[in-house]
Length: 309
Image 1: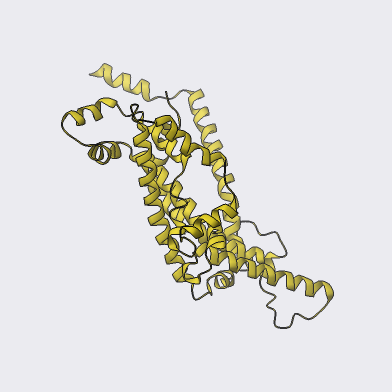
Image 2: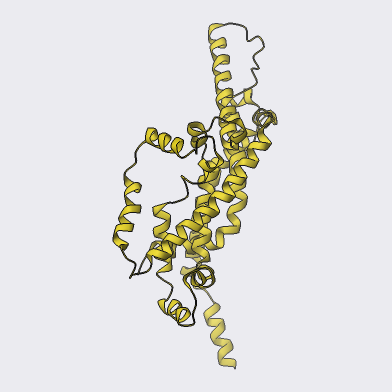
């Protein structure tokens, strides 16, 4: 018993070189964390800083003249709440449908005896490298009655070959004997998929779900190209319009100041940079709050799904 206690003490005691390594490693990681957080903190400070003061430059990590006017400019649109609801519905439905489709395709292509397996892989690979362009997309969506439809947000972004390959590589690490045992017990493919494969692949599921959610949340170009119904405008698109309006107003102010003309009714306390900072904070808050819940799955999902031994 005494020998075990002494052995534990020897194991628990760190050498000087080990302590130096831990200290240097901790300092390096803290420095990297600060490098990643510093730009975001700077944007946060500008979003709460007076626009006129921001134009002078030099705002670092704390606002010099605190104000909420920048957020008021971005959120003054009375339709912003409806657009936020559209964005949330798009993220939830689009991410779940994308995950279902990509996971199902990955599971099917996992079968080595699948007929025409090579043809199917080639069929889903070609669009990853060759695109028909925006005009062909517009014509196809118009023919399918997707123009000015909520499904324009869901169907075109439902499949990603890259995500499917990541899922398929992860599923290849699950022993084939589990599926064979389930088939011998009379389980069908859907039962194997949802009751065996899915619970064992939660890390990659959470990873792909997060990727899909971020892609849907940040996208505003699809609204610009294929939607002209204000009832279907997403939050990102309305914030983009608010930013463009603020930038246009800022150009008017600068032109007036350069030519010496009076500003008149133009609000000179608006800065495109401050409005853009407020927009960035608003659009990133949901992702920042969501990421910690997926973090424990994220690292293992990416590493195990990207390398095949």
